[in-house]
Length: 554
Ligand SMILES: Nc1ncnc2c1ncn2[C@@H]1O[C@H](COP(=O)(O)OP(=O)(O)OP(=O)(O)O)[C@@H](O)[C@H]1O
Image: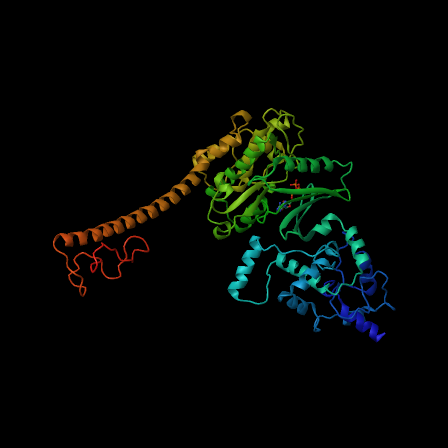
């Protein structure tokens, strides 16, 4: 029995089941966890199988049962937290460079991982590759290089989770599943589980839940939307399908959240989208509110311009969004200049801001066609009156109306009413009272977006060209051009000076020839000849210039 306990104690670590020690994990609990290991609903920590040379007892074998249930108190004593094989030591082992043989083996093996939250989803799934080209990886490796550390030190959640995952796969070097079982279990994994490692839940909405995931193959982050309720036959089905159809038709634009893939799983729709690391505009507004800050007018113009660019693209594709609002506009932090390279980004060419963030339109669940609309009204707080009255003749202008209200929200306007008198008065063209003074041209522009008559509202295309929005960018461009012009002027002046010097240097010997050749002796009497070692035009002009007179040179 002692031998049996010893074997178990060296293979199991329940620290991930109960970090705080408050859980009542008995053997039975953990054994049942093992049996539920592929159930997505299971959230309790899964016993972590530690790397160990002895294979006398392998927990991965479903047939394994302890001879006797282990009492709770005794069980807790079996934890390996401070033993030489604790997870800590395993982590540090994994952070050291490992041989290529080991890496390739770990990539092949299936493993148990103890990813926090939805633990069991990633169990038995393949490991995650680390993409060396992502911004995160590049930044991290340069940081590590700077600090001259030999141990990797991931300080964010992504790093931790990735690391845990990689560590787990290394632990699995001592593969405990026979090949047939591995194959069967891999087969039983869903596409979501086998292709992605779930890092955290980042949001919930009408559609369902959204998770931040890393794709095991490419090591990149994605936002994965999973519909909340089983879809077949539900009203949610249309919403999900609309989103997929719209994404597929729209393709790729810098101001529309990028779509990668979609599939159905267990009667749920799963959509793989670009992950926007700045969250939603709604989150950003809330954050500013807490900090007692407001979006500046320049930021508001930037927001309006960028979303207009996205809308222009959607509208020119014959579609309308119909649910524009702060929680459906997502933010990507702009990569630093060094990471982005020196050339202008696509956004800038398309008129976006060169500083700060990139705004992207997301959540295409209400998208419909302009010409044959099937309108599923979006959030009533942002709804234009004509849509409420089922007048669909100017649908793109309904997006413009919602965009106007979105910008007002970012400017600090009070929360919008869902209905009632206040709702109607907002639709008479009156701007709500604002906590900040907006310039008259910008205020009039916003007023124009909220005009009760949709035909008077500007189109997205007109907005993108509007001088009020362009002046910021024009000003920035002008400043940049001025800087470049100054550099060029300076360069030209330098070249002119060098040319002048070269000319006079070339002229001097001829002058000296006309007055009688003087051999160069000890450096005296050199007239206007360049001083010794002085360079002429270009970098290679330290060479002597010969005039074909032996004994005479300049
Ligand atoms: N691509 C993404 N990148 C980052 N976070 C995202 C992304 N997509 C969604 N989220 C987060 O998940 C939340 C809900 O997402 P989304 O609005 O798409 O779901 P929904 O169910 O359609 O919501 P709604 O009720 O607004 O229609 C967002 O508010 C945001 O915090």
